[in-house]
Length: 151
Image 1 (tube, rainbow, N blue to C red):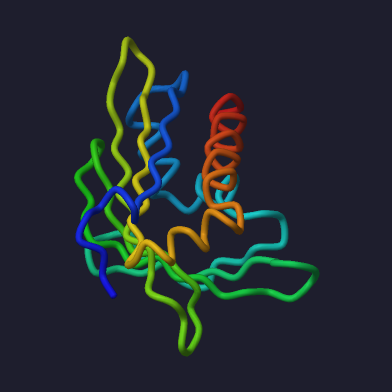
Image 2 (tube, rainbow, N blue to C red; image 1 turned 90 degrees about the horizontal axis):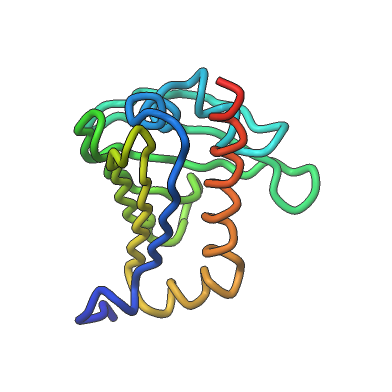
């Protein structure tokens, strides 16, 4: 059953990066950057077409050595201010993907990134939180900050 309000279906995480907006946007959309921070070691990109209607398919180790396939389907790209994509596992009978909106705002030479993850239901959000979605999003942004410091 779909929820009537968005608040009980969403997770929002924000972080300020000491990097220009164009670079931070590129870190989310260019293979040479995204493979350095998004997924853990051992991840492999199978396909990457970053445009509305395009898909990024990759596999990454999850719980041990087995690879789990993931898919990002790009809905909207408004360089360098906004990306909207659906994210989830790339398997038969996969749960509904998570609609993710990423915004990039300039703040005195730095970039404020806001991730909004919108789940199909409040129950799916609750399950994701139970399995570490908020901490995972924060850790991903921490890894991005570490990567941006080297570029």
